[in-house]
Length: 183
Image (cartoon, rainbow, N blue to C red; front, side, top):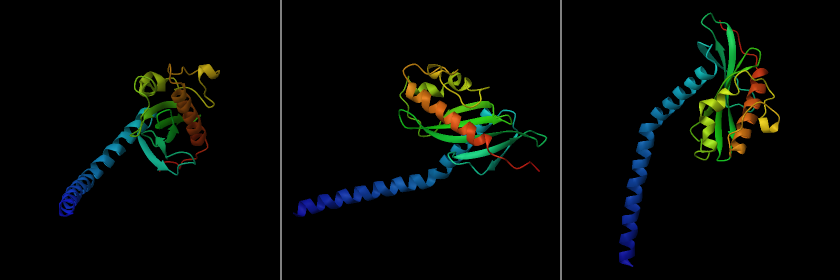
């Protein structure tokens, strides 16, 4: 009985030290992680709406994680960007979409911190060629195998359809968004 109690106390002490160490590590690194995520989001916005010099956050329409209006150096609205979370084969796919004032896709960035599509298959959605196919398209967009213009990733139809569905939803949501004029 005494031996069991001593082992239990040792296990408790080890767990307490490990828990405190994890908590301290989280406290120290959380601001750096948040800063890196914000920098990645800004880079994605610039990539999907390259004509914009400045972005102003606007109220995100239903279904979007966030939405931004993009303005050129003169303060004229050049388009909008929005981030949507789609459901792929392996889980969540974060997709940032840019559209111009006519509702035409100017860029698509695919990934996110929770991206876990199958390596070599669905993970190919992050490759530049796949997202580039959407540039110049307007909703509704569909895969070639569904009668559209977008090539699906071989052996990753679920991921390809999830991205296309999410891009369509983002384009429609952003198209109905009326951002404020830059002033």
